[in-house]
Image (cartoon, rainbow, N blue to C red; front, side):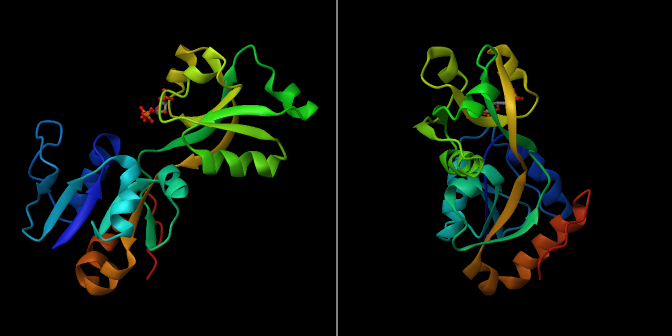
Length: 218
Ligand code: PRP
């Protein structure tokens, strides 16, 4: 049995064409079904639905053989025990710093002021500001980061930006682009050895279906 961990929404939707290229079709719609384990047209391939931030954990500990996860989630989780053969170039967005439109970020950084930063992505944020030499007080949040600068909880946020509409709607402006984000295929290292033929077939089919071929590690 091959178990693939996916999260509902953009990652699930954008992984479907890649699975199709591998000859795999998921037989139930996760938006309509309450099931957490979805069968496919291959009796030995199934999809498990997990929270986006849990995908690396499932794959690392063998609850799934492989999974699709955002680079943001992967960096925050750490890559121990995970083989990362492919950048799937899906669910693209960027990790950015944003502040209230009336907050002079550049001046604060120049002055060497301490910044209060609210984010779900504390590892990425900490590394970024450490490299810049900016001292920060980190406030860990689990969602709706945009609210933090509006309520005085923080001076800045580190969050994902796609269209920029959420920032705009909340009168926030993007002041730094930290990194480009896309989803990665992650594979349990032990599973790769034990189920090499089946997993390699999926990796190769995904790789061949990508718009720009990123060489699959052999
Ligand atoms: C992300 C992010 C922003 C929003 C940005 O949230 O946290 O809130 O998308 O997208 P935009 O630039 O197109 O407006 P998501 O909807 O993924 O949910 P989350 O808050 O649970 O991370």
